[in-house]
Image (cartoon, rainbow over all chains, first blue to last red; front, top):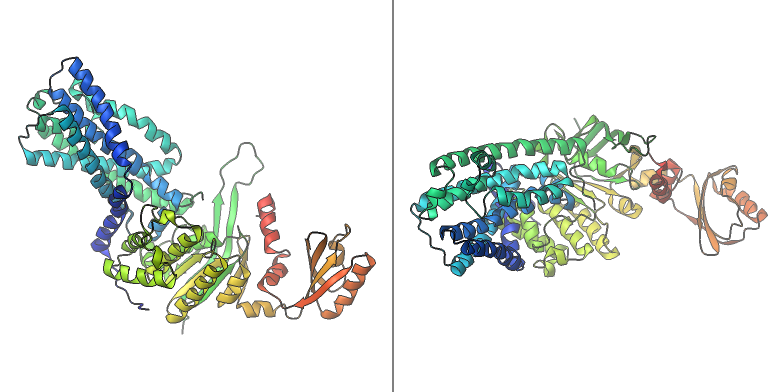
Length: 278
Length: 343
């Protein structure tokens, strides 16, 4: 049997770590078809309910589009709550966390892999809701600046998954209570982030506070860019929202890195964080 | 010339702070899991840590694999301090624990192994080649494309073992690796472990077990550990040789009629008596200072109306070494530990 083997280090190892950890998330979707029902059909029910309410109230037609786009973005928030924030806790329970810490891989690479895999798989779900919703409710889009739209989406995802990476360490430190926090954060964020209505409807300070959730501004900016009267219903200008999203991305990713290092130090000092309850 | 140690520890200790239980105020606040452990394992050695559950074996492995900081002393693996030079230690080691459920159930065996290889920077083509070789060695090729969630406990453990060897570690830690494996699979694993060490003498393997046969059959040297302390460390043959002067007899006897075995330990020349009650009869094991003491034992049994059904003399095992060192068998020690009479 051959014994010599070449092992990459540095950035190559970092990239391999990201791709390695992203892989289960990406292929996992094709193995478990039930997501089509739970993550496209069920969110479509909520979307439909809001659409019927808006139509009954004879709200402007843009509101229907707002709901469909918002409904699609809920998939990302669900992914952040249940597959990013709680993930390190589950990794600890299965024993994977100890193997990650013990390996030469950088834990930040593991988290980035989780984020990348989550983003790719969730994008398919979100796209499914957009397509289905747009067809079912005949939503009209008018994309003025495609590249700006792409930039907003990319920044919203970077900030959002940065937040998820930060929350992953935080949830692990909180251990079992994390489950309750995830439950608590689900519905209130649907409201605060304006998934089904423009956040301009809020008082300025409430909307500003809600902007800590990257999806709030990301969604608001995307709506301004894809609907003709979106700008009139926007909270801040797209440029301002892009600047804030850049800031949030930097803050959340830096915080994720600091918390991850703290979590690893604590794991090694206390020994409890790498102990699974098998 | 200095000796090339793969694993070296000095005064290594670990104390766990226990969570306060308001209902049990007299409960100790600390647990000493390891105390003053000094070990030197040479490169190329297959070293065993033998001890009951709760002896401190896993704590020691966690420290050596950079997962846990020592409270006292220091440890080096492959020449690097495990606490201060973790970045240098990690590419050179790997660990497999018995009964672990690592990986992702939705991935196939081959995909899970590939994923872990990526965390060690192994290029995919090389990783797949070595994974396929190891799958064949462990007779798991036909399950390569089975989702790991669909594997039995034994097959899953084989996958975990492959994960450990796959990264070509310089120092490999196997923590109860045959846990959950049947007799045949355990034998295959032991054979592979021996072959792996013999193939390249730069490799080192530290194995923890509470199975005497495993330690006896596999290990070049064994450290017997109990309640966080290393009680003895030598080759299995040398450890057993210490007991060669003593004679060990197994006796099947009729029911003990309520007699306490402690009375037999009072007899001159009797070092230890182990009593195993069976259905309608009993099994006694006597460790005697010399063979001539046996006649006194037989007389004592006869006086108590205990009939001897069978009597055999046997060679000492590592279990006997443990009994001599600790004063009770490993099973008794585990039971005492779980009843709260441990450390």
